Image (tube, rainbow, N blue to C red):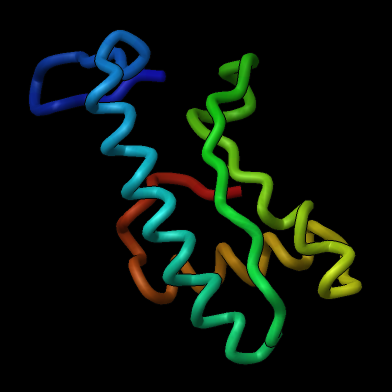
Length: 100
């Protein structure tokens, strides 16, 4: 995963502290969206886990919370993910470059 810090190129895999901070920021952002959506859902939310995909083509990070909510919400994971993405982009439109 690469992130640009000004003009310098930073590989977060080589900077564990930066990666931990970034993962926590992602968790906080997703948690805020889930808390808002859970006012409608009313379920016990699972923990949010942030993973780095082995295949870089799959993106910089992966979050599987939509998969774990499928049985609780009785909805397809794609629908749940779309709701989460919609809430994140409504709350913080510039926080992620691309969410899918």
